[in-house]
Amino acid sequence: MLAAVGQGPVSPATARAFLRARLLDVWLGDWSRRPDQWRWATEPSAGAPEFRPIPRDRDQAFFQMDDGLYPWLIGQFRTRYQSFGPRLSAANVAALAVTARPLDTLLLRGLPATAYQQEAAILRQRLTDAAIAVALQAGPPETRATVAAELGPALRARRAQLPAVAGWFYEAVNKRR
Image (spheres, helix red, strand yellow):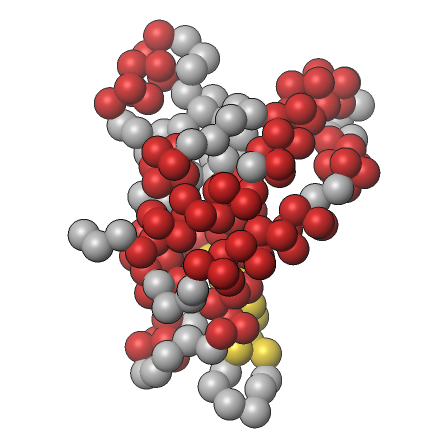
């Protein structure tokens, strides 16, 4: 996919699908999204080929950097390591985007701010309370209640912040370095 992108502009459908996946990454708190952590499905189209992102390796979702002295200290100096919690800020979103910056820049920089808001609205609509509850019940029976109590409120709070997150993410992707 990256070779095809180097030969011309990315299709709007490809860019928007990747944007939606990246907003989901931020919602999950998954800060480790290097280019090798994506696979791409090719979809035929009349114009330029379209690709759909398939994320892999979600080992940093719901990451906790404030669980003990050493992780807390590392989190103070390495801002890309963000603890998952109910509140996000512009600084959190920018830090969550650090490892994915090359791919974000390549695929997302041409999208207008309105696209970010539209994709956030779509994601927010799909992440219903029922969908979150079903996902939280997918783990082992022994941990379901604890996981639901810890993650459920944070996921709902982060969902409510998606419009602001989309704006902050747009700024993080489009700031000049």
